[in-house]
Image (cartoon, rainbow, N blue to C red; front, side):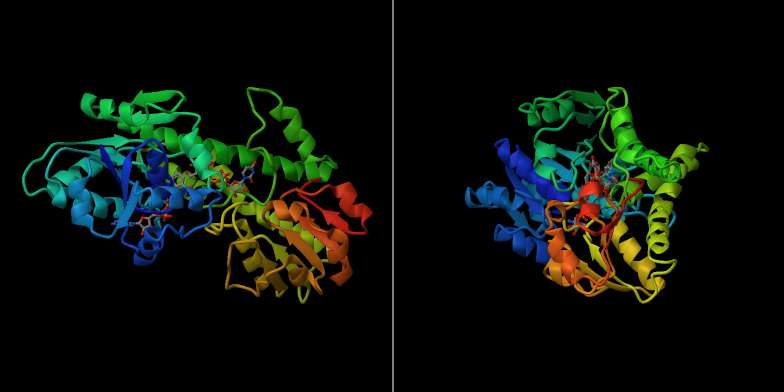
Length: 424
Ligand SMILES: NC(=O)c1ccc[n+]([C@@H]2O[C@H](COP(=O)([O-])OP(=O)(O)OC[C@H]3O[C@@H](n4cnc5c(N)ncnc54)[C@H](O)[C@@H]3O)[C@@H](O)[C@H]2O)c1
Ligand SMILES: O=c1ccn([C@@H]2O[C@H](COP(=O)(O)OP(=O)(O)O[C@H]3O[C@H](CO)[C@@H](O)[C@H](O)[C@H]3O)[C@@H](O)[C@H]2O)c(=O)[nH]1
């Protein structure tokens, strides 16, 4: 069985590589010339720990190849994973244009039975649409099955998440494709949920939304903790030890960002609306998430005498979380824009992510030089290990705002800083 992944972004590339690890021959197809050129040389076009090494290994062994030749790639492969983007449309719904385009290409070029697997995060009912799009562009009827097999990897730990997942969800109504999917995943040691495409599609949205909800819950609690003089970390620990609640995704901060939670929570809300129902609990989670950077900005202004105008502020961290260069929906960029609106002078640093919004410096020391305050926005390990005394020596004022609650307040204060976290 040969595997084709369509879309060589985070999900497509990871999916391709994990199946190489399982002994399959994989082709990656993309319309982006720059990405394909890099991948063909064994180079990764995004930052993800450990992935470039694995790519090089399978590239050199001849297990993975990359192409822009759609027709040939579709004809030569039996199992096709759709891994294209499903960004948020203007109405908050998932925009399925890339999935539709790919489906029509598959229909146009397939010449024997194929299993089409949607790895992209797609709304309930999309598997049926994909089948219709494919069938309506076939020159003559050729059988196919569409399987929903959502991806649960996190950026920054993509390989580990994809190679050792908590579960695999396979949604199909055909016995033939179920057998093929079982065979594909036979060497994974985790529970496999076999279900219908609709259930599978909904599981993905329900999981992401639940995690986003957990984050918004602790973030809203953090605002109450702030006025009550309670350290929110003590609350996270105290409730997280209850196994029914669990300690994960209870870190208060600047709010969730990234290419998934914001768009998926919104799309799920829209799915409910389309069917005459509401997901009001998720609407609240979105509102809390939008308010959280504003809450933090107010704390910053309060500490700096009521305004940030003409203050030099060093933003540390641009990516939406550590270990990725992805800045999509990053709370850091949101905060930078708000600070610029309030006429602050903003400088920045990130170990890998880039921005054109404000001057970016190659070292933390250069970024904080002459600053009135450091604002920590991303939980990079190197920011936890910064030589704070050396930074203080080059700053105008020693303010440190920790938007990720990642430093030890007592220690930072003892070095002469004025430390402000999120309810800490
Ligand atoms: N990024 C994540 O951590 C993650 C995790 C789980 C699920 N997902 C979901 O997986 C999907 C893909 O996410 P991503 O982050 O990998 O997206 P991405 O934007 O990084 O990559 C998508 C790729 O698809 C390519 N593409 C678009 N149209 C194409 C076509 N007609 N033919 C060939 N290639 C085409 C694009 O050029 C791009 O390289 C989304 O639905 C997303 O919600 C993402
Ligand atoms: O306690 C926490 C945990 C996370 N975050 C933030 O939440 C966002 C998302 O983080 P994370 O979930 O680790 O990253 P993603 O790579 O976006 O992964 C999510 O989105 C993917 C795409 O759908 C799913 O596959 C993953 O299972 C899901 O965790 C980031 O801004 C984090 O800083 C917090 O603020 N507090």
